[in-house]
Amino acid sequence: MCTATSGPGAIHLLNGLYDAKLDHVPIVAIVGQTERTAMGGSYQQEVDLLSLYKDVCSDYVQMCVVPQQLPNLIDRAIRIARSESAPTCLIFPSDVFDLSYEAPQHAFKQVPSSIGTAAATVRPSDQAVRQAAEILNAGEKVALLVGQGARDAKDELSEVADLLGAGAAKALLGKDVLPDTLPWVTGSIGLLGTTASYRLMHDCDTLLTVGSNFPYTQFLPEFGQARAVQIDRSAKWIGMRYPYEVNLVGDAKATLQALIPLLQRKEIAAGARRWRRGVAEWWRAADRQELTDADPINPMRIFHELSLQLPDNAIVAADSGSAANWYARHLRFHGDVRGSLSGNLATMGPASRT
Ligand SMILES: Cc1ncc(C[n+]2csc(CCOP(=O)(O)OP(=O)(O)O)c2C)c(N)n1
Image 1 (tube, protein in one colour):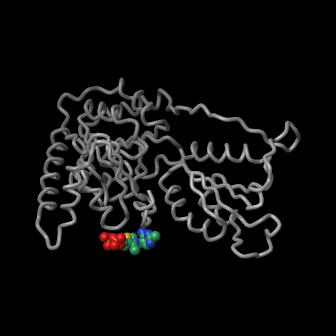
Image 2 (cartoon, protein in one colour):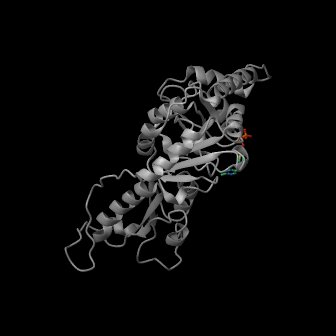
Image 3 (cartoon, protein in one colour):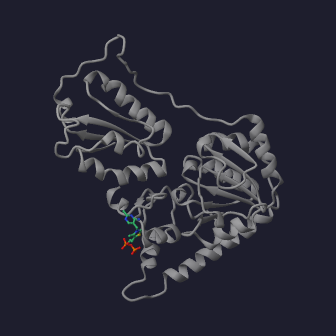
């Protein structure tokens, strides 16, 4: 939830709300508007907020002009933000706050509401899961690409990695999905990524992407190099970053749980030792960079020391700019450390706002 006053206040929310929209974070914005009696009169600070918010809150933006709307507007704004993982917005002319509450009646053109929603677990069909398992079982060098959509599936990812001898690269927003202390986790991927992740993607013959919309083609396997499967919670976001053979629409945890019994353990996975070697080499190289002396200070040294000091339950918020690079590459997450930043919008200032 975030709030702002009318006009310039509402405009200031835009950067943060676009950040939420692009990174799929549910949030409800409540913004003020000029009095109903002044609307359309070009009084001070009147901005057409329904139009201004039409894009950033495209899933739901509404204005409340009578109290009978309140239960429905509030409940829907929250429900839609949650179900679409997106920002929504309610606009309140300031004199509406002075009205007494009146509940909607059981009458024509009145809209009641009800509280609470039982969340659904989305699962792909058995046949699609079997097809995915066939592809993963046929591979010898399996790479996992893990994003924020896999956040609650750490145990399942570990089991898949163990069965298939897979390595796992993490998209920026998925940095806290798996700790960097695991020998098969190659760290971040992409422009801000590690050499271990780069090699994982360029050496693999099979790719399983879970909960990630990572777009940078040059850091993915060449076309034709790997057979690929994607798991994503929504068909809206699936199948568009690589020519996946099977696109499984489903919650990461539930889908991996359906997949695991069908996976055959690879006793000698060609990839497993290779990925682990790459990980060890990366962290040795990172250590060398971080411990190189500089005047006044080598900034990577700060991230090195922070990695050692972070409590297991720390939450790290990083900003955009060079700090994002050092956060992605050099901060070693362990335990249940959580971390985030402005991923897709890469707007400046999110760390101080978080
Ligand atoms: C709101 C916003 N304005 C501008 C940019 C473009 N931008 C990205 S990084 C950056 C410079 C950041 O400087 P600083 O915070 O000092 O970090 P540095 O990379 O120099 O370490 C700019 C202007 C942006 N991402 N967001």
